[in-house]
Length: 240
Image (cartoon, rainbow, N blue to C red; front, side, top):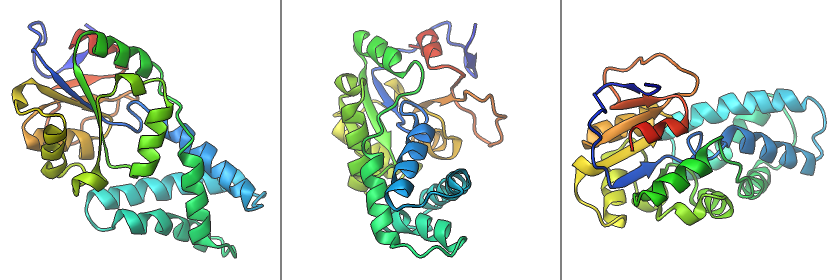
């Protein structure tokens, strides 16, 4: 069996509500992030050391989103602070607020999907599951990217932390997701995501089954266990 499962799945559970993380689970965030940054740097006539900017931003952006999960920064501050850190390292004279706004505009157009995302959403929809996206991302960005993507027709709801008032892994966003999805039974709900600290920890603490999407086969380094672990999205067919 290609699915690494903590519990025996020979007897498949009858899930109904499937909560799907957006970035790096369905949407190819790494690709979108790089394309949007390249376009913005070009717009501001920053033409030297582009790859250095991109590599630095990936680290800064990853770290600052973890800060958001931990509640040490607000999403509004995050939008600008990540570029403040990026340009302060290089002492570049640039309007950071304007740069941040233009970056968001470019990112909104990035709707590339990970391999297998469209196919698995079509499969789950055909099997009559209710599919809801649950994301900590910026509302205007995430809604735009999903709406423009091939999976939009399969998604019932887009649950964004800005509207919920809580970021994953806080239980509040899961309670909000259940409310929006008009669903109550935790036993028949499953969250699928790539982040142990956000998706899996959040689902585990809320009391629903979890599926860790782990394409890089990273080691499990936390004190809680996902219900399922998969390397490819198509492996969900072994579960659902």
